[in-house]
Image 1 (cartoon, rainbow, N blue to C red):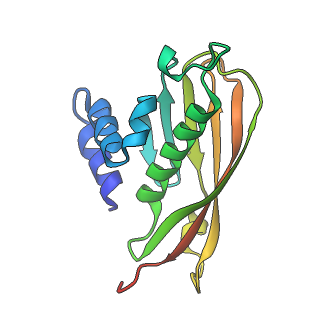
Image 2 (cartoon, rainbow, N blue to C red):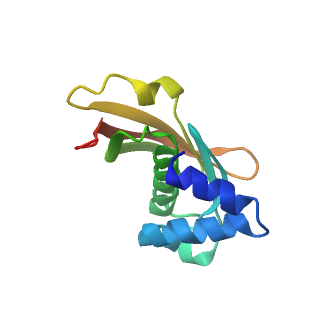
Length: 158
């Protein structure tokens, strides 16, 4: 079982475990701490986290800033990749394309999803793997959606 998924299963079963996991994840990639992500679902091919709407992530309109949204989407994608990728492969982000579709006026749930077959494709010299991402307000309105492209290769020496 991948380390991120294993840690999630161990910590999320504890009182305040999802908060402990979220803190630990943010320490691994400190920039993620700026949005204070709170992971709520981590499973292969599907991750969800919440970005709390607070002044520190506001833009000049008082809504959640576009870059904070992208940060949340990338954190969700990273947890998904680490929870899903076969042990003999590695990944790196290659690009992100998003569209902002509504104002982010509440806490935002960031969702990353893939299909199982994407991770077991023939590696060859490497391949692009698109991860679907979206951010959703508490009323169900999608405020950002798009795709983060990963480059997947075999681990050297694996």
